[in-house]
Image (cartoon, rainbow, N blue to C red):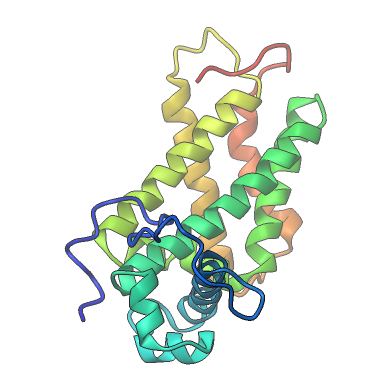
Length: 228
């Protein structure tokens, strides 16, 4: 079965094959829906490991099933294709990053410069903490398939919107807030990718300094929230 299923048209992260609403018979203390959920999670964790270590193109269904400890029957019960699983893995990883950044936004200092550094430090710590996540979201997501690439660009837009909603934005500069924040998030992503490919050669403080230097000219005094 081709990895790049042309039938993949809906957002990944949702189960393409919707389970029946009944919970089914209980087995080993788990309902049918609970067993399916566990199998799906096992495939996602296997995907994180293999896509992050070997890349999308080098990963086979057989290897994924072996890593998950499940059969191909269960793989195709959960996912339509390898691409379908890859998209679900990306959704899972992006959700984790978004939640971490939102927690930092909720507790960041009021001073915009300190807040910027706090957000960037959280982001780059997440990238360094899991090289597998970094490879999947910063490299593989842009090459695995056209659908994956589109969702990767959409995630940049989502992060930029989060920045605008939670950081001060000065008025009167004649600049489009969306374009500026998309550019800043894109720059941070590019730095993260280069840092990952160098195996984190530079100290994280140096990476944060570089990213922050791009952001600081656009920050206000913290007196008002940004535009959407």
